[in-house]
Image (cartoon, rainbow, N blue to C red; front, side):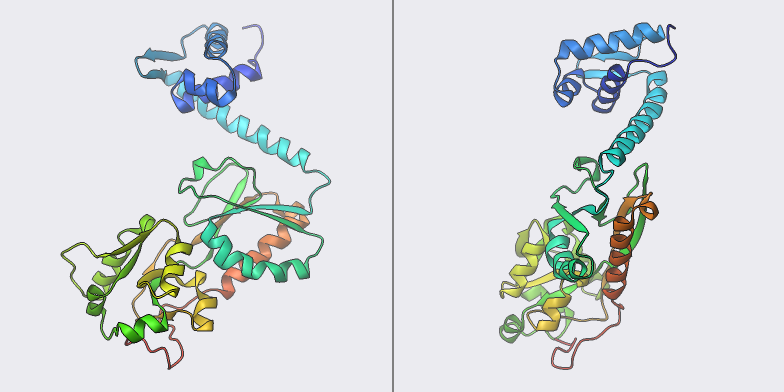
Length: 312
């Protein structure tokens, strides 16, 4: 072999081809032609003096040796990309880039962010939202991302910081017109469903000892902020995460029902850069997020004021 290090361009093409299992998709992703991808793969195969892919009718399949090489190449490219981001951000360390789902950003983060900005006027927080349910689809660079499950990425640390406790919620006006005394009463009223948690109601009713043998009627929403708004505007009983509705509960816009019966999720996690200790702005923001998460913690047995009793 002429050199122990193959060309970087060929390695990038190789990584995309293995990941997508398609030369066409790799070409589309890298904004080059199919022919250029084929040439780069051919150059690597000549370099290593062995085939790297098996051509199939629906794409390409990497050889066993190519898959082992891919794992090392991807990790190395990720480290290079991370180092490049660090260099690009040199002198801009007062900027913190955060990604979160719209519901978390709108209903939990933004109401608290104003105080952080007052306390830390020199730190610029750039908030981006993602609708994707899959972390792999997130392409924007970030320093911190908030997710509803644990995450892993080279160069980042992950920590659980916010409870994910779901409970039935309704507006006071809805409860005046639809009295709910026992959990079985939910079967007779309009329910609000969240498409990403389609089994939530059947799971909650199961914990309450209510057997459900038919599809629960009601409206289905794609995002939490939509389903919670529907509950607040008298459309039915929704299943909401307590951390996202504490302001609504305090203001009386929503009522928490049967506080002794809850659904526990994995918790909201933050994935953040491992070098946070060397970045004062990022370290300050992460510390603040952890403090806000702790302040938003709810005990499963917590009850609310007497005028909003759990025996609705």
